[in-house]
Length: 284
Ligand code: NAI
Image 1 (tube, rainbow, N blue to C red):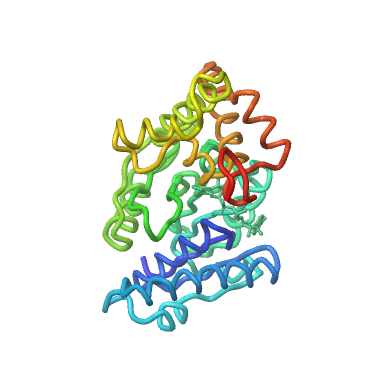
Image 2: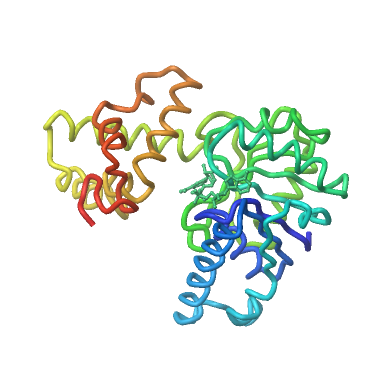
């Protein structure tokens, strides 16, 4: 695997492009328009310069400028034609992703090329079946921030070939130096299926007046050695994203533990989205 593509130059796409280029791969990143490409490139460059300033770029990765030189930003999906692997990281919208997979399938000239999605909650099967290569389609789910967090969930659908999963494992483990775990094609995979109900329980506890946000979070930090409490974590993930993933889980399993509590719904309606909007369970 030498030629990799990323679609979506947002938070996750920039991270996936960064770790791929740091691994020495040739990377093309496509976003919908020039403004989005410029934003993504600035975000990626800032992250690389920070890593360089902290001495985190290794000899094999090269300097920030050398890493940047391995990345070609584009606005036209045609720039991905010769890629051996493309990771989709556009908005979490099923219609948009289905449309994109249809187009990418026709764009990639290599029949063996792998088409991966970074989706957190959309079934991989829905993306595989709109292509002529469902055996080469799977989920490769990274965690935010991508350059920092080691985990990647590999999510084959019922139609994904074992060889596709193994080639993807080699990419994330041998090339990117991450650790892969295998998950079934079910909403939330492993991590979000466990993490989201935990966060929702903390929100219910806070909503009921059982304990303050600070005390709930301190309880988990000091009593269970979590690096941060569940409400601070919800603010970091984004309350809109937390709600969207909860809704996907609820839609899939119909279990009350996945239902978004009213307070979460109201906070999202109010634009209180956590760190990114300056206020959530805490003020930033
Ligand atoms: P984001 O909103 O930061 O970035 C999405 C980017 O996709 C934007 O730059 C947008 O212009 C672009 N885009 C939208 N439609 C497009 C199209 N049709 N063609 C090309 N570009 C298009 O979103 P973020 O947070 O990076 O999420 C991307 C994906 O990663 C989603 O599927 C999300 O569920 C998943 N994800 C997000 C995580 C997070 O913590 N934010 C963690 C793991 C997965």
